[in-house]
Length: 213
Length: 213
DNA sequence: TATTGTGAAGACTTTCACAGCT
DNA sequence: AGCTGTGAAAGTCTTCACAATA
Image (tube, rainbow over all chains, first blue to last red; front, side):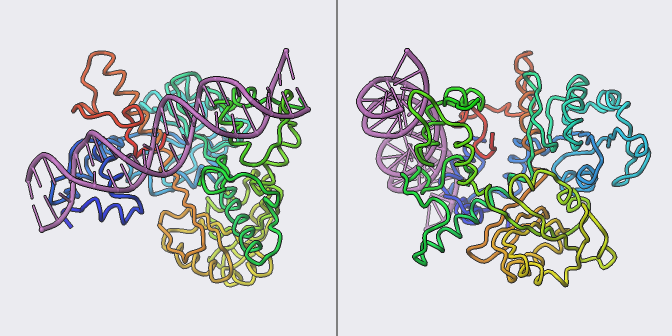
């Protein structure tokens, strides 16, 4: 399939084709009228805009179950990420191979960051250690942090943090699950367990705006 | 602190106080004019609306590094989730304790779901096993699935799936990182490595609409 | 002819600003 | 006096619809 139309892509992605064309137009005019988009060229342009064509060395700090899972995760390499080092505070872990790579001790953190020009760090430590690790990463030159520890990190301006809270995804599922249960009960003529009290509808079809869809 | 004003909450959350009041208003009128919101009552009402006051039994299928990390994750219990069972296809895993709980074999999947009234399943298997596990979960009565496997699941109508892609978060950081680098170079009077070709600005201050902020 | 790229319209969200209540 | 709750205004995003064009 050498070319693809906005209509086909939109159907596959479940969005409106005009929106897709407008979004693409912000990246430039990469389509051909009457034909569509050249698949290979489009993939390259989007990859470049997203930074997929660059090599991003990352370090993972905290090699417990989660850190090991991340180290073994195959999806990183294909998106331009290279795990430059695995770091753990436990001296007993040092030298142990995880995902074909020896774990290094926290003492080496600054040297590893500098030697590899790492600008992205992943924190998978227990909550108690996260802020301290974060500060050392930032001091050594890291400017983007992916935080899996269940704690809010404070960082200086210019440093990006993204927090991944595994329970929030479950929360969102439970929210919809609850809503399904409420609707069934309502359809059965039973008082729904939630939102029994009438209240004004929100902008998004009665789903409170606090909750992402 | 028995009460809190929308102004205080908005400042803490980094949002506009009118938006916060309007959002709260969709849940009901839980504030007092001239005073603010009663903290305890507000927490209860939001918890109830989000489903935090209910008990949600969940099963985790696939007890590798990631499954084990999820089983050990402390944040679930406090949000109303209870890990009802850990399930793995490897007979050698069966009976092994993980997070203080014996791993059960996939053969027991249907019985576990039914006996515990589980409606939420977590898939942490390799990509190849995910769709099959998903189908068995759905057939046994699960209607919400949290998928960590790097594959897109197809499910019947009425079943919710959320996919967690650990590399997408890194992707977002790398995207901003690239932009930081571009801006520095531009400030130095150097040609930025990306978006060198001029193009129209997108709706969100030149950040392409494809990328979540 | 088929499909892009995009102004203009429409839909939705956020903010303003103030009446209404404690 | 102080703060909520909310209509109305402003702002942003999405979709329509069609001129441009390969």
